[in-house]
Length: 218
Ligand SMILES: Cc1cc2nc3c(=O)[nH]c(=O)nc-3n(C[C@H](O)[C@H](O)[C@H](O)COP(=O)(O)O)c2cc1C
Image 1 (cartoon, rainbow, N blue to C red):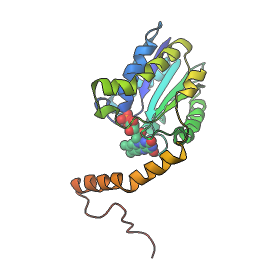
Image 2: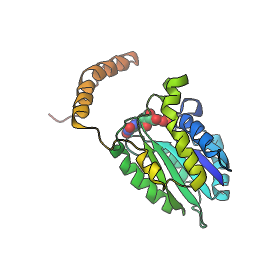
Image 3: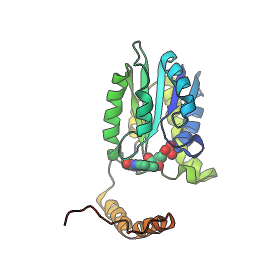
Image 4: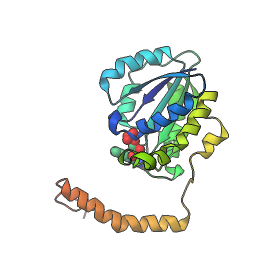
């Protein structure tokens, strides 16, 4: 199988978590008899090449980060420029995010299912997983621990050409954290994280508090 892989992150390849995930995923996929070509929508110079590959390839995999609970605008902007397919192509997705609970990715997943149809493709499923904020910020063993599970998924995809396997469904992890963990995370965001966000904002030149609501009525 030959796979067209599109990294849908607006972040350039060097800084993209999606890219680090794909590096490991592709290793798994290449353990069976496959080939692939990969492009990044963050590089507008590649858009013509991606469109050509889109017309040519029947196995399309779009890997993307969740941005504000949905799909990055740049990826949508690119997809509006492709011609929907009319043959037997399959389109699958890797949807990854910062926060770990599966539930917040489900709306995006539903949309991706529709998107495959709108682009004239059979839907091959979406590999859904969060907890990826810091992949690009760590190195060595720490990064390997975060990305290694994607190798198994690459192996399955390489053999089946889609994410319909039960293992891919289970890959997401917890749909929602247990109540004590949610309480703890809530507390963390109100205290430690809030302080750290304020500090970063100040460093970046913000002069008003982050909870400022200048347009709030009353
Ligand atoms: C503008 C922006 C919006 C984001 N929105 C979400 C979100 O709604 N939920 C979430 O879990 N992570 C969110 N994230 C985190 C990214 O999904 C996460 O860091 C991802 O691994 C980034 O992949 P990339 O480096 O390939 O772009 C957001 C990140 C950015 C920069």
